[in-house]
Image 1 (tube, rainbow, N blue to C red):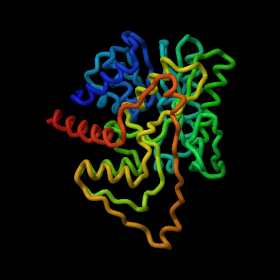
Image 2: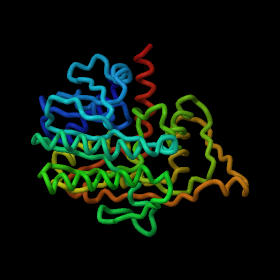
Image 3: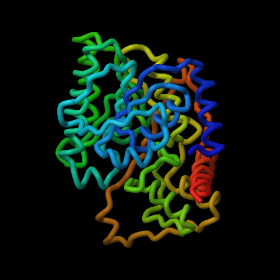
Image 4: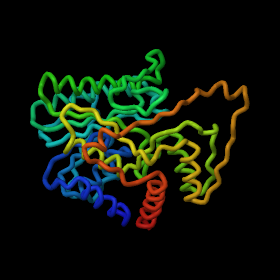
Amino acid sequence: MISKIQNEEYEKIGESLNCDLTNKTFLITGANGLIGSYLVDYLDFAGAKVYAMSRSIDKLQKRFKNKANVELIEQDLNEPLNLNMSFDFIIHTASNSHPLAFSKDPVGTMKTNLFGTINLLEHIKKTKGKFLYLSTGEIYGNNIDHSFIEEDLGMVDTKIARSCYPESKRAAETLSVSYNAQYNINVNVARLCYVYGPTITEDNSRADAQFLRNALENKDIIMKSKGEQKRTYCYVADAVSALLYILLKGENAQVYNIANPDSIVSVAQYAKTLADITGVNLKFELPDAVEAKGYSKQADSILSAQKLIDIGWKPLYDIKQGLKNTIKIKKELECLKV
């Protein structure tokens, strides 16, 4: 079931890539997630043969029913892979990727990012396929005086469990380039920022996801801070086109940031844009001085995508258009269910 707007997005991605993906084989891990599910949908649209992998076959069957070019694989990536086929491309999107998951399962977060990546790299080293690892802008830590570029090393506090996510992502990056150096595997790493869109999952606990759920339910958007910290947001269609651009046209063993320079806004600006589009109220319920001591101080987190833009990639959806598409697609899909 594809909405009119989704179809338009897929056609634009195809135009930007200008590559025939018919009969190419893709393994997408984390296929039930925000980015993974959009990847599967687009690749199916483009005529590729897609293998969608996740820990839950029930969720896969619910999400991708009636897709002829999609084969479903139930797999815990921490366990040995039960795969008897090779792939032209593996895109590894599987990971806990929101705050509640990190706090509930920091060990599991690290295991998937480390053991899962090793298992996939061990599989692909037997073939001539290409491997794309999805990392995160969190490996840089917080901004100080400039937008992060790929050469920045970043700084993360290793003494807290919350660092399970960026530290294991950083290690998985090194795993990927190490397999390239030792086994000559074609690999790339993509560092993503705050990706949003209609495929966002119900369990996502990020603030922007909560804002979106409230707006869709015609509820007020409530902010617990002034939201002054700036973020580099990226609409999921742009994120997916960037991932495929890196995979098909990126330089081997290189790292690329994925971000939209036209979508650098504060958290409050993001919430205000969403509220204006949907007609709901934006309210601030700021903590008092005592309560505020329990909140961590958030700094800006801004990524530069100039390296990717320099090889020809171009984002198409600024924050306003991306949020408009998100709302329209959600509402169109609800109507199609009726």
